Every structure is written in structure tokens, then in C-alpha cells.
Image (cartoon, rainbow, N blue to C red; front, side, top):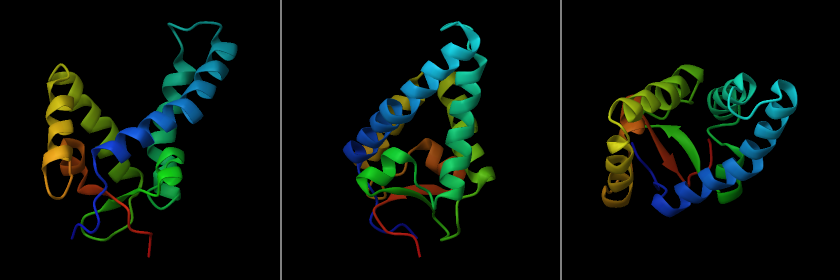
Length: 135
């Protein structure tokens, strides 16, 4: 059951904050480790680990989501785990790549227009983004 879904602008702002607060430092560390901006395995790996692990151990929050008071939750009320986050981040990301970005546009429209504010990757993983605090 979806309770207090977070809208498009809060979700976008949280992603931007994650990019600035987490993504930029990870990229800089990756550059220092690999001495390359283009072929940087560390940055890719660190971003995937961040997307999978942080919400799973931090009640659905990422740094950006925590700052804005929103979090990822399962529609059935369960906790998000690494498997859920894999479906949401990796499988959802593959859908967006396979559709050449059209899926991203459709997801943005879904979050803006749907009452439950769920996007394609939310449907894949059985999640939504909420302003509800964890139980």
C-alpha cells in the first residue's frame, strides 16, 4: 500500500544531491586510483555498491533522500534489501538503456502524473518513494 508518495521534484533534487555529495567525491577518488576519467572501474563499482547497499542498510534512504526526508519503500510494507535494490537500480537501468532513454522520459511522466508517483523501476522492484518515516 502506497502512503505519502514523494513527487517528481523532491526525487529529482535528491538524485542531484546524491550526485554532488556522493558522486563527485567517488569520481575524484576513482580518478586518483585509476589515473583516468574515461576508463574508471572504481567509480562504476562504487556507484553500483552505493545504489545497492546504502538504501538496503539505511531504511531506504540515500544521502540525498535523507536530506530531503524521502526514502525508498516496498509497496508490500517490507524492507528494501539488496535484491530489491538490484532490481530497481540495475534491472531498471538496463530497461532505460535498452529503450535508449525513452523509458527515462516515460518514468518521469509517470512520477509527475500518477497518483502513486511510481516509475518503471519502481514497478520492476515493487517499490515507491515516500515521505513516511520507517516503522
